Length: 399
Image 1: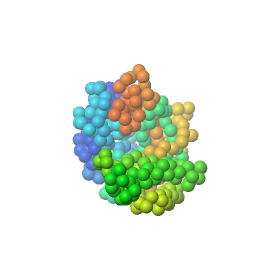
Image 2: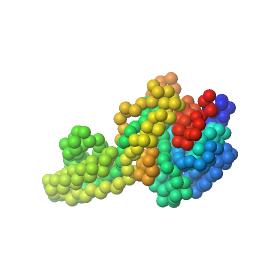
Image 3: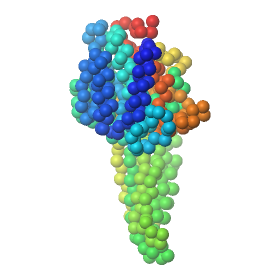
């Protein structure tokens, strides 16, 4: 599908992007490279959606037809890289720890192949999105008129998945990733001398009981058949050895696949806050900030992806029975507007003792690196999917 010389160029480009990571809405260098490459392939290119977003459109040579969207994310994470290889990040505190460098290059590779062999009807919109990591760049692109300017009938995305072998893919019908909600709880007590606790209201004791009680939200307030996570990830209190603090601040996250379950979890948290506040004489306030909605694949588009993946990778290498993940994705915003499907692409073992610098190859880890062996696999999948969407004829590239 793509010759060794072209693949070597794409590997070098992927490593260059890895060495020069850019955070949300700051992906100017990456966007310039993407726009340059798309123009070099002959696509019509538009820049500036959501500040640094890029969209390239390729018209098929088989006549009019539907427009299909293929999306890759471009941003990096505020993580200090701990790898020692030559293409490690040159920017302190910034790192491609989630593989968006690989996602970008796979979609560029697919654009390159399809531009050379546009044997399909309709058109393909190659969407390069900024700010997936916690900033909701997909929603900003929509607000900037993404689907008005590029009226796709369906939209597709993928993410590399450590732990799945190279050459494999997972396709889900329905939920694939969860919604995410920030939880912030303030526990207000009455400070005082640590040696005279009876004169105050110990906010740390009340907050500690609350952290423990919150573990019952999913265990005793939700059906065992409903999936949800409530995790407290921050506990901030006090500054002196001998003083009880007035206030404790708790922060955490709630994950679920359904609004009904989210609502039940929030109601249970409020009940626990009220009960523990009454028990200890404290005041407790909980605040919920809803972020990404759940990523829900539509059935027809999931079937289209399954079929394309099986053609590209082989029937035995496409899994349709893996459970969804409690991680979140802002591709969910696109799926609220258009039918589509988001798949997982195998990135190899999560641990590889033969490669010490990739020994903890898991997402968001400071030792992570995208596996370049996945590049041709992802390109093959994107090309099959694109041709399937507008296929008047089959792909001559594989023949």
